[in-house]
Length: 223
Ligand SMILES: *Cc1c(COP(=O)(O)O)cnc(C)c1O
Image (tube, rainbow, N blue to C red):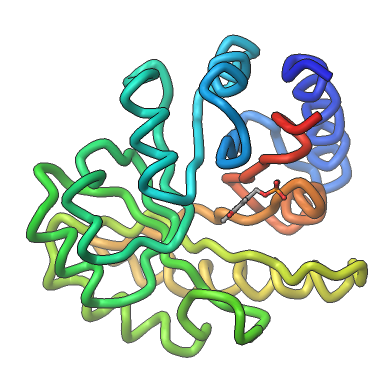
Protein backbone atom coordinates (compact mmCIF):
# COMPACT_ATOMS: atom_id res chain seq x y z
CA UNK A 1 0.00 0.00 0.00
CA UNK A 2 1.21 3.50 -0.59
CA UNK A 3 1.81 5.69 2.40
CA UNK A 4 -1.02 8.03 1.48
CA UNK A 5 -3.53 5.14 1.67
CA UNK A 6 -2.10 3.98 4.99
CA UNK A 7 -2.28 7.52 6.33
CA UNK A 8 -5.89 7.83 5.25
CA UNK A 9 -6.73 4.71 7.27
CA UNK A 10 -4.78 5.96 10.29
CA UNK A 11 -6.47 9.37 10.13
CA UNK A 12 -9.83 7.64 10.03
CA UNK A 13 -8.95 5.64 13.15
CA UNK A 14 -7.59 8.75 14.86
CA UNK A 15 -10.81 10.63 14.20
CA UNK A 16 -12.87 7.80 15.66
CA UNK A 17 -10.66 7.56 18.75
CA UNK A 18 -10.92 11.34 19.19
CA UNK A 19 -14.70 11.19 18.86
CA UNK A 20 -14.87 8.42 21.49
CA UNK A 21 -12.76 10.43 23.93
CA UNK A 22 -14.13 13.88 23.15
CA UNK A 23 -10.82 15.19 21.81
CA UNK A 24 -9.75 17.13 18.73
CA UNK A 25 -7.44 15.52 16.20
CA UNK A 26 -5.63 18.87 15.86
CA UNK A 27 -4.18 18.26 19.34
CA UNK A 28 -2.28 15.28 17.96
CA UNK A 29 1.10 15.08 16.30
CA UNK A 30 1.73 12.00 14.17
CA UNK A 31 5.38 11.02 14.09
CA UNK A 32 6.15 8.81 11.10
CA UNK A 33 8.71 6.28 12.31
CA UNK A 34 10.92 5.42 9.34
CA UNK A 35 13.56 3.24 11.01
CA UNK A 36 12.64 0.19 8.89
CA UNK A 37 12.43 1.91 5.51
CA UNK A 38 14.41 3.67 2.80
CA UNK A 39 14.87 7.36 2.12
CA UNK A 40 12.49 7.01 -0.84
CA UNK A 41 9.73 5.65 1.37
CA UNK A 42 10.44 8.40 3.92
CA UNK A 43 10.08 11.06 1.24
CA UNK A 44 6.84 9.40 0.13
CA UNK A 45 5.58 9.82 3.70
CA UNK A 46 6.50 13.50 3.72
CA UNK A 47 4.76 14.00 0.40
CA UNK A 48 1.68 12.28 1.82
CA UNK A 49 1.58 14.95 4.52
CA UNK A 50 3.73 13.60 7.36
CA UNK A 51 5.60 16.56 8.85
CA UNK A 52 7.34 14.77 11.72
CA UNK A 53 9.85 11.95 11.26
CA UNK A 54 11.13 9.62 14.00
CA UNK A 55 14.31 7.55 13.95
CA UNK A 56 15.80 5.45 16.73
CA UNK A 57 19.46 5.12 15.73
CA UNK A 58 22.15 7.65 14.94
CA UNK A 59 23.06 6.14 11.59
CA UNK A 60 19.50 6.06 10.26
CA UNK A 61 18.80 9.48 11.68
CA UNK A 62 21.80 11.10 10.01
CA UNK A 63 21.32 9.30 6.72
CA UNK A 64 17.78 10.59 6.41
CA UNK A 65 18.38 14.00 7.93
CA UNK A 66 21.27 14.68 5.58
CA UNK A 67 19.09 14.09 2.53
CA UNK A 68 15.81 15.52 3.72
CA UNK A 69 16.89 18.33 6.04
CA UNK A 70 14.42 20.82 7.36
CA UNK A 71 11.52 19.72 5.16
CA UNK A 72 10.56 17.64 8.22
CA UNK A 73 10.71 18.03 11.97
CA UNK A 74 13.09 15.44 13.46
CA UNK A 75 12.34 13.25 16.46
CA UNK A 76 14.94 10.98 18.03
CA UNK A 77 13.01 8.14 19.68
CA UNK A 78 15.68 5.56 20.50
CA UNK A 79 18.08 5.30 23.39
CA UNK A 80 20.91 7.76 22.90
CA UNK A 81 24.48 7.03 23.96
CA UNK A 82 26.16 10.03 25.55
CA UNK A 83 29.16 9.84 23.24
CA UNK A 84 26.87 10.13 20.20
CA UNK A 85 25.10 13.27 21.42
CA UNK A 86 27.47 15.64 19.64
CA UNK A 87 26.79 14.03 16.25
CA UNK A 88 23.07 14.64 16.20
CA UNK A 89 21.86 16.96 18.91
CA UNK A 90 21.65 20.16 16.85
CA UNK A 91 19.67 18.31 14.18
CA UNK A 92 17.13 16.90 16.63
CA UNK A 93 13.97 18.93 17.14
CA UNK A 94 12.60 16.66 19.86
CA UNK A 95 14.32 13.94 21.91
CA UNK A 96 11.87 11.33 23.25
CA UNK A 97 14.28 9.26 25.32
CA UNK A 98 15.87 11.35 28.06
CA UNK A 99 16.43 8.85 30.88
CA UNK A 100 19.51 9.85 32.88
CA UNK A 101 21.33 12.89 34.25
CA UNK A 102 24.57 12.02 32.47
CA UNK A 103 22.74 12.34 29.16
CA UNK A 104 21.23 15.69 30.19
CA UNK A 105 24.68 16.90 31.16
CA UNK A 106 26.14 15.93 27.79
CA UNK A 107 23.25 17.58 25.92
CA UNK A 108 23.79 20.73 27.93
CA UNK A 109 27.47 20.73 27.03
CA UNK A 110 27.08 20.00 23.31
CA UNK A 111 23.83 21.59 22.15
CA UNK A 112 23.91 24.96 20.42
CA UNK A 113 20.32 25.66 21.41
CA UNK A 114 17.68 24.60 23.88
CA UNK A 115 16.49 21.03 23.22
CA UNK A 116 12.88 19.94 23.68
CA UNK A 117 12.84 16.57 25.45
CA UNK A 118 10.43 13.95 26.65
CA UNK A 119 11.48 11.92 29.67
CA UNK A 120 11.17 8.22 28.94
CA UNK A 121 9.32 6.37 31.69
CA UNK A 122 9.22 2.60 32.10
CA UNK A 123 5.68 2.40 33.45
CA UNK A 124 5.25 -1.33 32.92
CA UNK A 125 8.48 -2.17 34.75
CA UNK A 126 9.61 -4.65 32.09
CA UNK A 127 13.33 -5.40 32.41
CA UNK A 128 13.85 -5.01 28.68
CA UNK A 129 12.59 -1.45 28.57
CA UNK A 130 14.55 1.76 28.98
CA UNK A 131 13.33 4.61 31.08
CA UNK A 132 12.97 5.81 34.63
CA UNK A 133 10.63 4.17 37.10
CA UNK A 134 7.60 6.44 37.64
CA UNK A 135 8.62 7.17 41.23
CA UNK A 136 12.03 8.44 40.06
CA UNK A 137 10.69 11.04 37.66
CA UNK A 138 9.98 13.93 40.03
CA UNK A 139 13.44 14.05 41.61
CA UNK A 140 14.97 13.62 38.16
CA UNK A 141 13.08 16.68 36.92
CA UNK A 142 14.15 18.73 39.91
CA UNK A 143 17.77 17.83 39.18
CA UNK A 144 17.39 18.83 35.51
CA UNK A 145 16.95 22.48 36.52
CA UNK A 146 20.78 22.67 36.51
CA UNK A 147 20.91 22.10 32.73
CA UNK A 148 19.49 25.18 31.07
CA UNK A 149 19.49 23.75 27.54
CA UNK A 150 17.32 20.79 28.54
CA UNK A 151 13.64 21.68 28.27
CA UNK A 152 11.12 19.06 29.35
CA UNK A 153 8.01 19.18 27.22
CA UNK A 154 6.46 15.89 28.35
CA UNK A 155 6.68 12.21 29.21
CA UNK A 156 7.11 9.25 26.87
CA UNK A 157 6.44 5.55 27.34
CA UNK A 158 6.14 2.30 25.44
CA UNK A 159 3.38 -0.13 26.41
CA UNK A 160 4.16 -3.85 26.63
CA UNK A 161 3.60 -5.98 23.50
CA UNK A 162 0.54 -7.82 24.74
CA UNK A 163 -3.06 -8.28 23.67
CA UNK A 164 -4.56 -7.28 27.01
CA UNK A 165 -6.10 -3.95 26.15
CA UNK A 166 -6.85 -3.05 29.77
CA UNK A 167 -3.23 -3.55 30.78
CA UNK A 168 -2.05 -1.34 27.91
CA UNK A 169 -4.63 1.27 28.83
CA UNK A 170 -3.50 1.22 32.43
CA UNK A 171 0.11 1.94 31.39
CA UNK A 172 -1.00 4.97 29.36
CA UNK A 173 -3.28 6.16 32.12
CA UNK A 174 -0.49 6.02 34.71
CA UNK A 175 1.73 8.12 32.46
CA UNK A 176 -1.04 10.66 32.05
CA UNK A 177 -1.58 10.92 35.82
CA UNK A 178 2.15 11.39 36.35
CA UNK A 179 2.23 14.10 33.66
CA UNK A 180 -0.65 15.93 35.38
CA UNK A 181 1.14 15.92 38.72
CA UNK A 182 4.35 17.34 37.22
CA UNK A 183 2.57 19.87 35.05
CA UNK A 184 0.76 21.24 38.09
CA UNK A 185 4.12 22.19 39.64
CA UNK A 186 4.67 24.79 36.88
CA UNK A 187 8.41 24.36 36.56
CA UNK A 188 9.94 26.80 34.06
CA UNK A 189 12.33 24.18 32.74
CA UNK A 190 9.68 21.47 32.64
CA UNK A 191 6.23 22.59 31.50
CA UNK A 192 5.60 18.89 30.82
CA UNK A 193 2.37 19.32 28.91
CA UNK A 194 2.71 16.52 26.33
CA UNK A 195 2.42 12.73 26.26
CA UNK A 196 4.35 10.71 23.66
CA UNK A 197 2.64 7.33 23.67
CA UNK A 198 1.01 4.96 21.19
CA UNK A 199 2.51 2.97 18.30
CA UNK A 200 0.98 0.99 15.42
CA UNK A 201 -0.66 -1.56 17.70
CA UNK A 202 -1.98 0.69 20.41
CA UNK A 203 -2.28 4.31 19.20
CA UNK A 204 -6.06 4.37 19.44
CA UNK A 205 -5.95 3.38 23.11
CA UNK A 206 -3.19 5.95 23.67
CA UNK A 207 -5.32 8.69 22.11
CA UNK A 208 -8.25 7.75 24.33
CA UNK A 209 -5.90 8.12 27.31
CA UNK A 210 -4.60 11.54 26.29
CA UNK A 211 -1.62 11.01 23.95
CA UNK A 212 -0.48 14.18 22.17
CA UNK A 213 2.32 12.56 20.12
CA UNK A 214 1.83 9.13 18.55
CA UNK A 215 4.77 7.32 16.96
CA UNK A 216 3.68 5.14 14.05
CA UNK A 217 6.02 3.01 11.97
CA UNK A 218 4.80 -0.23 10.44
CA UNK A 219 1.17 0.76 9.92
CA UNK A 220 2.22 3.92 8.10
CA UNK A 221 5.29 3.10 6.05
CA UNK A 222 5.23 -0.72 6.14
CA UNK A 223 3.46 -2.67 3.43
C1 LIG B 1 9.86 1.46 16.29
C2 LIG B 1 9.29 2.39 17.28
C3 LIG B 1 8.01 2.91 17.11
C4 LIG B 1 7.07 2.51 15.97
O1 LIG B 1 6.73 1.17 16.06
P1 LIG B 1 5.57 0.52 15.15
O2 LIG B 1 5.07 -0.60 15.96
O3 LIG B 1 6.24 0.06 13.89
O4 LIG B 1 4.55 1.55 14.89
C5 LIG B 1 7.55 3.81 18.05
N1 LIG B 1 8.31 4.20 19.10
C6 LIG B 1 9.56 3.74 19.29
C7 LIG B 1 10.33 4.19 20.48
C8 LIG B 1 10.09 2.80 18.39
O5 LIG B 1 11.32 2.34 18.60
